[in-house]
Length: 197
Image (cartoon, rainbow, N blue to C red):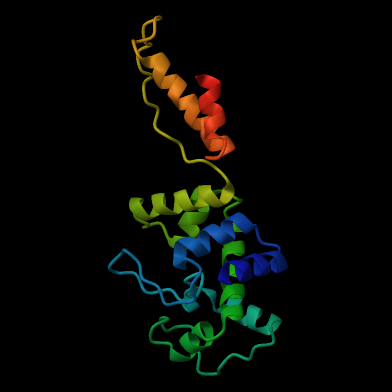
């Protein structure tokens, strides 16, 4: 359901779908939760996109106004997400608002990065992102973008001698028979056996 919501909201906001899907998967695996980071000093993000109110309060106000959702007067943009109970309740209690906020922030950062994934990641996550987390996110990004991650080049094996090794013909023939059996099903096995007899 949350993947579908991410797709819908990205479409409504005109955001680039692969970066939205990859970012939300990397941040929360499409869950509206309070998150955690691998850096011991990081403050927790909140919602589908792990947004920090301190840096995105104006975006929250804009999105809430667009959705006609009143903001509690007790929300304090200067407090961190964990201590800000009204903000926590608002975001965790409203998937639509949380997703719109996440997509709006992702879209703004993506545009600011000029569509460059490395720059976006630094803007969205921060420049102190660990190498492990960066690589994890890159794999997710490649999957959503439809790119196969680079595979290390392995030297080609030495070419076999021109003459086949003894018994290889039989192995190949048995492999072909197995493929034929799978293709026609078990009932037709006797016909295949008879054809090779």
